[in-house]
Length: 411
Image (cartoon, rainbow, N blue to C red; front, top):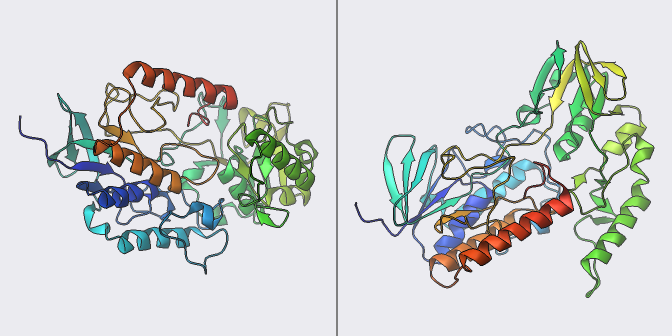
């Protein structure tokens, strides 16, 4: 067996992958980064040629500029509080050029297979057939690129057009049509609002109640409200919930089901526009779909609406096509990891940005990469296997207790 080079493989040059590149370079750790697209930015590159971007033409970020930027590279002051996706993509490109890490990224290159070697290290096969060996593998391929459809599919048949939000780009195709948006995440709200400006009618179908949080509260960005020192997190959430309630009123007043959870117990749905579109009669709220019915849809309450197009905003699968199931198996979008980074079996396999925070991923991906770098340099040691597995079990139980057992809330 040939000697394993002292190099690390990073898969993906999106917002998490480029953070890993910069941090490893800072720590003097040799690495190669492989990116399927022709530029950095991943999901934030509109019409990315790797076909993995879910960005639509009108997309703006939902976390404010200071909360999304990397710690040592602020976003330009001329950017708005909530920048457009083109500005975010520009920022990521400027980041890799400023820190001179672009030359370590091999673009238009996919990793087709990664296999652990006996005794440690990884063998990586690229789409050109070449084979490379590395001492460690950092996975940063993102988790918003493999569309998840309802399982099982709704019964019946539908005569109109269907798509997933992953493929949605502009509202023009929905002019004058009756549109059904299925889901209650951020993309569902954005797409419902946008199609409602051109459609005959847009409907939102939801399975359960949820809270909609505006981008601004009391004249401040939602993630920049001042918090007095020493206030416990539980009390912070209660005050925050009260402010949202005072600004929005009850969700049931807009036709949504009563939420069965408090703010902070599910990933936030952020929109400053959808409630206005509902009150102006351009969006109507419907319960979950019971059955597809030719040129219409029958809902759980027995009502039926004529529908021309369905847009499924039903989330994404957590997928690693380069890792065989016997190496890494994801069940129901759940991949147990130690503190969302370290794989419990392979001590040289790390996941960067595989989490769904209440804020932005970028600062957390940066912190995760620093942690991994310390580990690779021998400056941090993992707990014993027993302690590590107990920690993972506790984290999984806490997550399910807080968010429920749902594919949307596994990270």
